[in-house]
Image (cartoon, rainbow, N blue to C red; front, side, top):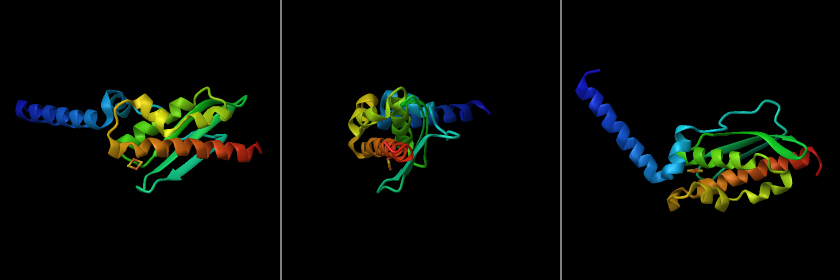
Length: 144
Ligand code: FES
């Protein structure tokens, strides 16, 4: 690439990054760049799947040992905020007993994320619902 094209690409990338930080905040931006726990989990013990009124679907997969979450992953076909909220929700399940999973709420995810614009906050509530769907699935499978 020549210099002017390099400069253009750099400026464009900086603009995209600035806009993403504006929407996701610093914490969310870092997670968006490195979406931890994204993917499926083979032989999961619990699976939650929910589609929001926006049309986005979120899925949470849990592996549970001794009634605690040992492994987690998530999938979503949603936007950057959906991915970030799902990633934080997934992270928050780790080490929790299934009785403690209801502590993961839209509010607690937003608290972890910090600064999320009002228009995007529903993503956190959908991610929390996906976790609760996984919890319900675990309870049904294990008759709790
Ligand atoms: Fe649909 Fe965020 S836009 S969950």
